[in-house]
Amino acid sequence: MTTSNSREATQTPYLLLEEAKIKKNVASLYDHINKLGCYVRPHLKTLRSLQAASLLLKDLSSPATVSTLAEAEAFASAGYLDLLYAVGIEPHKLDRVIELSKNGATIHILLDSVTQAKAVVECAAEREFQFSAFIEIDCDGHRGGILPDNALLLEIGRILESGGVSVTGVLTHAGESYHCQTQAEIQKAARNECLAALTAARHLREAGIRCPVVSVGSTPTAHRVDDLSGITEVRAGVFSTFDLFMKNVGVCTTEDIAISVVTTVIGHNLEKRWLFVDAGWMALSRDRGTASQVEDYGYGLVCDMEGKPLNYTVASVSQEHGIVILPEDDKCGPENFPLGTRLRILPNHACATASMHDVYRVKQNDEVDLQLWDRIRGW
Image (cartoon, rainbow, N blue to C red; front, side, top):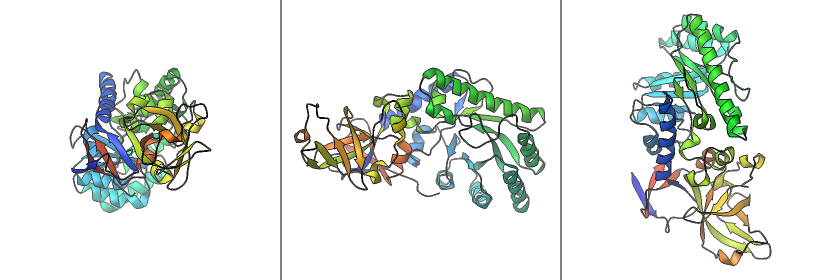
């Protein structure tokens, strides 16, 4: 692991991670799910980093979820053995799945249509390869998938099984939970998610189709679920760092957010009480996910370098500039933030902001030097 210069010397903008907070967030969710008799299959898509994965996965055999085959290739090359590619499979990508498996890793694929099932079976026969497949279940109308009582479920299951493809499990994702406004609503979403997956698994099993794994998960429901009876695994991703969107949903506080963009004040408009910073949308992303929530954080919440919120937001961005507007009634004016002042911006959506950076700088405890973590790129 390489080390960068101190925080004071590092050029801005850069993405800063706080390892202690990540560890705390991970331990908290794992403890909750383990107490309910289940295990976590974490989604690695937020940070897409081998170093970050070591904080989420106990060992190389631990189950994990990825959103791209580029991630799967990087993690398989590093020795990870149990990877779920949780995006609907496209037939032209099956050869890459087979290549990955040559290294000893199991790459589970996801599908929800007869067309996909037939394509997988055809490829399995041609390449003499046994795929492991999950069937995606729709629990709330916010994603793809098959409704658990739809006859297509059994048709797909039979096509796969008769073609020598292992029906490893069913998978669902409670997308509705991201729109919840109360804890009771999140708990209801969690129950709906579990019920849909369990119903689908029961139908398959009653038809004589093996379905050993029942997989559910989203960051909100994973934190508020209270009964995982019959569920095998829980998936969640952004919980490792959290973000302002999750803070608004009510599953974390701003103090839990382990990701920020460090930026520098590069100019002022004194009449308008504006601060210009060197973090635009290329550093923060264009994600405005909090705009429809109870509290709108613009393009991010401004904090001091110790991470204390200053109650200002990044009001607008261009490619390489951000504008922070100081309220008229605020005791601080632009003169309180002289040229060269460094600030931290908490992001709306950790996944989107992380994707704007090739390298993360990681604060470990109170050390001045920052560790460097690389991001896995591509699809």
